[in-house]
Image 1 (cartoon, rainbow, N blue to C red):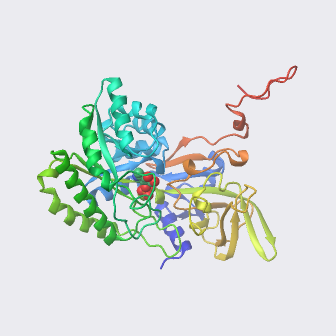
Image 2: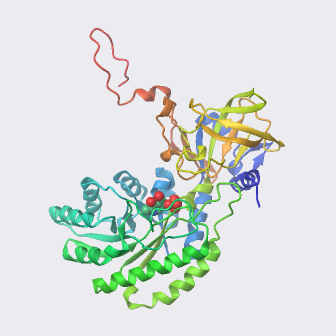
Image 3: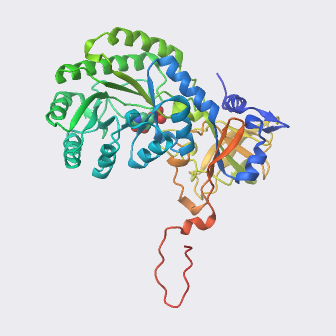
Length: 450
Ligand SMILES: Cc1ncc(COP(=O)(O)O)c(C=O)c1O
């Protein structure tokens, strides 16, 4: 079983290892990148992302749709859109805008998620995306009304919440009571309503019920269940389906005792499963897709933060860094984790150093919640060292409360084809005033820029 330090070293090696004792992703010393872009910053590895996308596609033999929510950085999306011919799954009109700007084709975009506003539906219809995956019977009617008002037609995927739970997963978003999708018992009504609206084209079925799935057997059973639900939907519709979106939720082994998701084992079982359904005329010509977020990008990101202070308190060493939960909420265990566990961390400045007794690594956010871990083995950290938080390519920047404590936002940098590319510049302290309006104070000049 790999320790967290083994995992961090393995990921660092995949980034390109070290040079002269410091982390040197793609041969570029991390101190140089920190100097150029300022700390903290996110660093992504383009080749790791594109290799992962093609490996998943080849293994599964299906389409792969990138869940933009995992990392909506435009450059990351562009890379996936252009290099690997993947589709996109979006969950807001902001993500739709990013997906289109990145070059995903509208016929390869699906829009899922509860709470889509009329404006969001309008934008999806305007762009003629492949399918709006509807989450309720009301949304079917609202989508039809909106399309009618625009004199357009739009594809529909029915997001179904299956009666059976997907076992062996982390966070569940289906097979249980929640805001996601329509109960399987509503399938007949959902098909009937969709067909009753001439503005809607029934594309197929979408099921996404869980994230952090590691167990292959239950996931295959879940896929079989989705295929059966889809056959029923085709029977009810009286025509073959054009799409089955299996969701996915493939896990990333962030924490101790977790091991890699067995992609090859799953793919073998899935190909077998699909071969017996492919011949069914109800699924003839159907697009099969998995929508994946973290599994495509998590490994390929490291959050780099600088040690500002090292202090001892009651026998415990605290390493205090210039970034924390404000930039990387998930890595500080504040995004729904039941137990707080540490991501793999390394002292990037002392790659050859021997990890010392566990230290606590804390960010600058003035709350005990702002801690990357309380017992982390790190090579002799000193002020000025750079700490790397691995598995940070997904749910990092965009999943954080960037405004908390008003620190500048981190830069995002992509290593790609031997060079470093700035994807998003880091913020400046005065950005905190941007967009704000001050109360007028007669006789005093405005202190808000612009
Ligand atoms: C509908 C839907 N699809 C895909 C995803 C991506 O999940 P993951 O990053 O675990 O692959 C999510 C995550 O919440 C989701 O809600």
